[in-house]
Amino acid sequence: MPSGPLMIIGGAEDKLRGRGILREFVRASGGPDARIAVIPTASSLGDEVVEVYDAVFRTLGAAEVVPVRPESRDEAGDPELVDRVADATGIFMTGGNQLKLSAVICGTPVGDAIVQAHRRGVVVAGTSAGASIQSSHMVAFGGPGATPKQRMTQVAAGLGLLGSAVVDQHFEQRNRYGRLLMIVAQSPQLLGIGVDEDTAAVVTEEEGRQVMRVLGKGAVTVLDPSRIVTNAYEAKRSSALLASGVVMHVLPAGAVFDLDDRSLVPREPAVDAEDAAELAAAQLDMRRMARDIAAADASPATLRRRLARTRQQNAHHQDGDSR
Image (cartoon, rainbow, N blue to C red; front, top):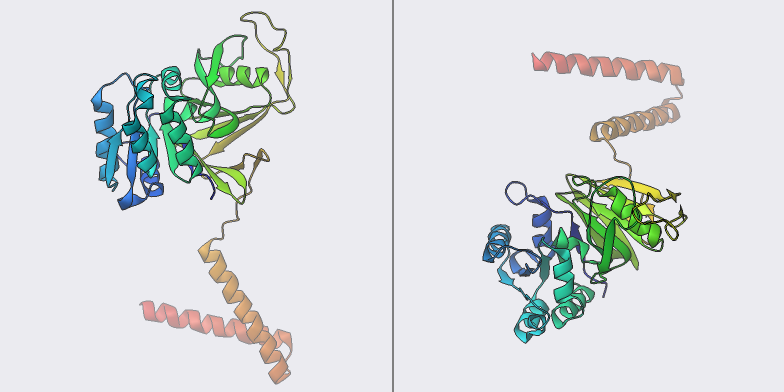
């Protein structure tokens, strides 16, 4: 069985109007049969954060929403919380402090239950901090800026649901290009993925490959450092880094990206319905002309004139009918 979908949300997802991203999460979780476990450990808010998502998910048709909120590694071993994760058809991790989320759940029974649920096909989603923790590596903290600088951010281990990658969120809104560039310059084996607000990178397994689709109002920025030239190994504290040869992909809604090949998946060409109808009519006329040539031994020029007169007469009748 392929692993379940991952929904990596850049934060500030729409909860009031169209709610397209959260609506897709509920659908993928089973719709009216969805049992959703909300993990708000990263949040500094109290029960309010669970209440918000409970109301949204139930409004979107979910059958059940349960909180899973360990506040320590000991609590993350609670069998009741583990069972709630194990019984869920969808898992949602809220925003907040991603280092706290990682420190509390990674390598614990609750964290292991999330990984196992993903492997058996359950959809796992997370916004902001809950997005970052899904990758093998995550940004612990760091400042904004477009220029990568030595030590401008720090990396911690994530859940590893998305391997060989590092995810950052609120990407365009908080100008986090520099810190993601710094990470991939120091670890060129990682793919850098920056997700804008109210945007989701939806990762699915298709024919043994990982494919990412973009959903929402913003874009997902992918930094591929496979052929990077960098001085990260020798740059001094806080100095700007050399990062040459990084391939950047900016993927808006509807874009599809092959994470294994690190390449854009071409879109199927869209056919305009009016153009298709016109082409079909022209092909029918050509078939009729060929048939008339074969049946009446008339010249093509004669048949074209006859066809033109027929069209004019039909157009005249249609104009008369419309009056």
